[in-house]
Image 1 (cartoon, one colour):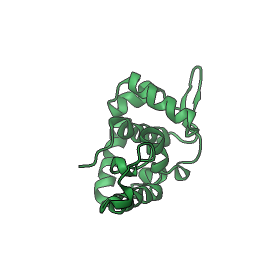
Image 2 (image 1 turned 90 degrees about the horizontal axis):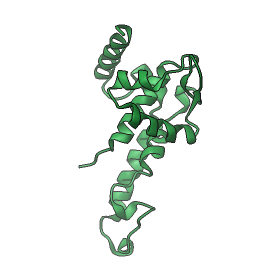
Image 3 (image 1 turned 180 degrees about the horizontal axis):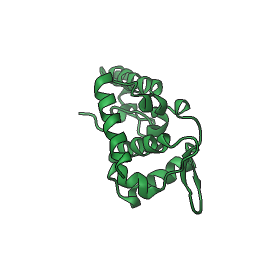
Length: 156
């Protein structure tokens, strides 16, 4: 079935951690890596892309690290995934980078195109602010995960 790459998954998780420090607590790559169990080298690649896209900014020197470039409620998950994964394309025929010669005669092209639009639409309605508030999906499940993350952070 459909799967995001680890780049997309880890990117959203890293942005969540950075959002937790917004607006005045920069996080180092090492802190993010430890909290999310991701390699520092992989995070450097991911955060470099997000920085070049203007979603995060880096502060050098002691006390430096990464901060969101905008408020968490202004950064939709679709923006993060768009930078790291590219456009939502369920099949190669709806991927603008690939295209398909059968579009005019394909019985399923519109189905895949609409499914991609629905996914992208949903991801545009969920922001980092929603993730921070636990305001997505099953409320009980998300709040449980957030409480666990908070306990883990406080025990460090």
